[in-house]
Length: 270
Image 1: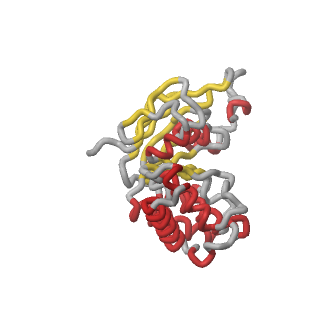
Image 2: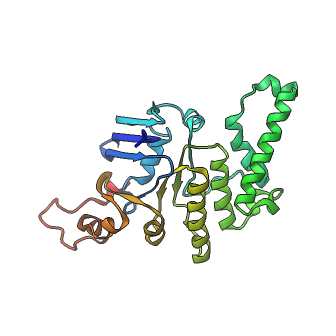
């Protein structure tokens, strides 16, 4: 087996006295499709923020294509091959659909500012390549006919697809999807499921997915990691996760608080 494209081990992050993530680890090969689940406040988005450089881990190692990325700027991590979407859509609403994708593609620009200012032949060629790649992605996501519309005017499901297309424009080795099905109706979720599989198959991109829709997770993810109060409580296939008593307890609870102090404080779900 080849070296993992993304590898994290022993990753920890605390905020004051709250241990938000404790000893987290994950390993992704190219083309992997894995899920990261857990109750609200379990630490899932904090993990994404650690992987993408928004937060610096207190402990642990994170490598992307064999190079350490722990503690470096998000822009540098994106340039090295990590892209993400967000639970709350973060499009540039005033820009066109096409320009949203083209702007992301500029992370791969090879020529400097002066080449662009002077409009050299190389800069023209590169801009043409960026435009062509952006339109190709819009076609893949069935958004080609809306290229000139403002991003904010797209229906909700189309905005979600545009955000994934924009992430792919950076040509990532690893794609992190943070609740992509949030707010979608059943038909949109079905289309999203097919789209995620298609992205994995056509781009050979490793995908790590946070999602509360368990039906979607169980259908498309090959392996799943479960967090609870910042700790990994289970890792395995969808079938193993569904049968794991610790996972069932984390989601449903036991209804028994036990001795004084045994009940988990709600504050720990920050």
